[in-house]
Image 1 (cartoon, each protein chain N blue to C red):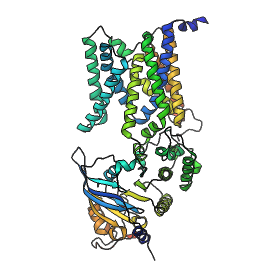
Image 2: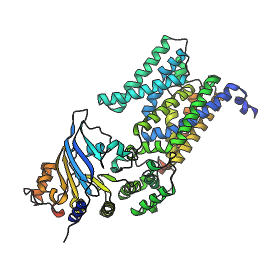
Image 3: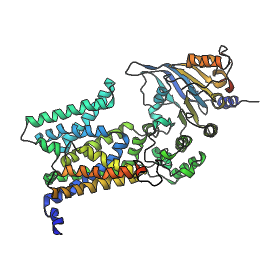
Length: 283
Length: 280
């Protein structure tokens, strides 16, 4: 029986070009905290890559660097061969924010939010074209949200809230989709629907980065993993990289303890972990 | 009956009416963005930070708006820079910068006492606005209304989600500057009407009331403009009969309208009025 991750690996191998190229990236903040230290990694295009790390491991900083918000002290990030700021102007990144980052009282409807995924590609007055409206309708349908399209975003359930922003990213139709903790506070149905959509998008050629500290189902959906703990602990195909040793180095003692409790093989570094062995990483 | 039309018999009152209404509408529109962005304090800061610019403009015989705009933008840049350099919280940086600017303004006023009275700056003089100043306010207001009419969707995106703004290839810094510039311009206009102390109310209350009334942004803009304009008009009208400061009445009216809406709105304390009870 072929596991999902092996299928993903085969797809990755067919697609040679580099989507995200990070070279010796170091980022520090004015309070002296060094968030990323000499990070180098390459992510292939047309793959789902899980970026794993504990809180404070540099995940958010990496997102900021990818979006050009955080200027690197050293090193560089290139997206599909171009500099970040140049590529952002060319509809390169569709960003799906954490639910906590959104003001849910904001007076916009589901449809308004999804239409924001088209805004950069509209005319100067930002009047939606027929194509924009069609893409918004299609995206809403794919996430199963047509029925609530006119609701104010605060009137949605936790799972629906996630779906709105997935729909916005789908409507944007960018080359790289960047999701920040997409599975937090989401029920199983939504998680499975979401993973199906991500796989469809991947198969259509979109590069997908899932930034998360939640280890469950990582081997199910990801083709690549990148583990961060200020430095890159490991980066590569999930089948070879998602190992107990690497997880231990990424998350520190917590995971090692949990692995012992759950009876998993904490010491053997060469065995990729299956889903049943995985502990829930405490938030 | 004719008593009720009395205020319209004086040219200074008529001028006061349309100037106040126009400023009310402009402030109302902008207040929607200000309150949703959480920039209330920044709006207040800019309305005080324009004061030294107003005084310098008076001294140099420039149009008021030029100096005011420059000092407002300097303060905005100063606030951003201070925050970045010091790592202090945003409201601390705002507090340090705008009080410093306002203090410079007060110093200048006291050093050149004949030029401009402190009372006018602090409390405005809606009914004493000279015709050429009124023309200036007309230009400022129409410009701001025009910019909002053309760019409201980008400003809305910037207000709602900065990361998405970047993802759409738009300039967050550009939109931030645009919004600061609009606030500084409107602050100068409103300063002449209601004075530096009450500009804040003009830039917040109409938007806050409109927020309670609707869950759709275009409707919020409309309500805020109607409230801002209508209550400014009403305030000037009432002030004639009450024989009190027009600016004070305008702002008090805004609060008087805000409060019952807060009690009845589904967003506010609607459960008090709703038969079903409970907030959704």
